Length: 91
Image (cartoon, rainbow, N blue to C red; front, side, top):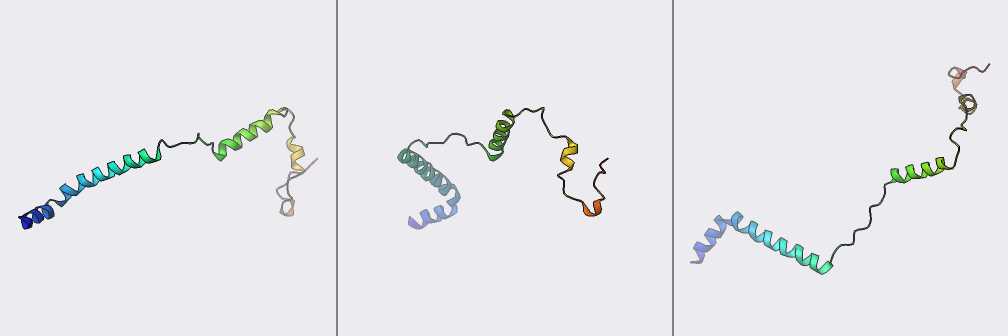
């Protein structure tokens, strides 16, 4: 009787092991969930890009957006180009 049983188990192993593994996995999953309890998920954390945007908006909120440097004034602070070729000539 045992040789017939082992031959059948060897032949139908995929059909037997998958349901057994599925049941063992499901029981283990639910047992672990029961022991640990409900997971405490923290609130959504904001990303670095969102934090940067908020910080930039806060900085802009306190300033007058109509008072900006002119492009001519900004030209004074640009680094010197090689041989002064790429720099606009001031009149």
